[in-house]
Image (cartoon, rainbow, N blue to C red; front, side, top):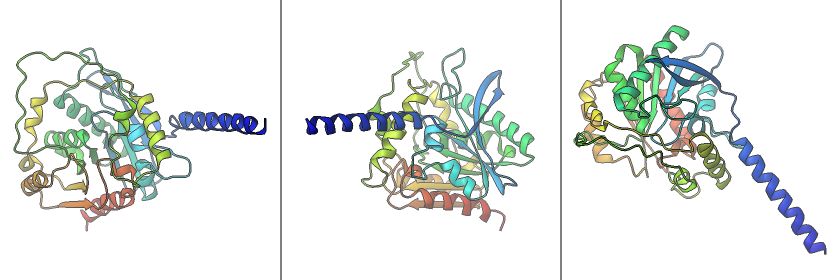
Length: 305
């Protein structure tokens, strides 16, 4: 009887813990704004500090949106990138692309590279009017490609560019699709949400569970993209802004040889390439997170030295 009672209490405890983790996945004190871009509402999340040293706009990757990526709240752990930048004296902003998080799909149901860059340009214009200052752009994975394309198209709106998890090769050309693609509306999975965490011990199992819950709550279906040949416009020689390239040591999507060829082409002499030891594609949420934040802020402040 005692064993059964203890087991019952254990089940109650684990159920309450799971509920707490699940509910925590949605907790954030980031303030949501809606910025109109081409007549479409773009969700922009704000975590500001008084008298900021500067402003950083974050763009998420291919599958998951801003809040799980950049403002993950885990009890007893400091994993929010936005909070990390706030602690360094910078106001942090994050935008959800069309079909992600707080931003609905538009009437076409698709996003494209050029559309994403135009949306980021509109958000940057809004931020400059609001803050009376240019913004530093920080992109992760697919978001780093959006950040670069935006920097090439709207250089006057940006102070500097930070690219992390850069997943493309400057010498590979994306072919033009010969037929109209079909909308997938693919259902996202727990396995997909946890797939970037590959270095053992770099993040707690509890944090992974919170991330998975938050990611699936924010993005139950995968956004659809088309006209991917527009990525062919990415060109280091057309990137004329101060640029920081962040590469995690074990990131399977960030090829060192491709990075070297891209880095050598960046037109601005104010450029740095920093490797994050021990990190993978999700290093912004793992043990190299502190180094990633410090490298970002050091670069932003180094520009004016």
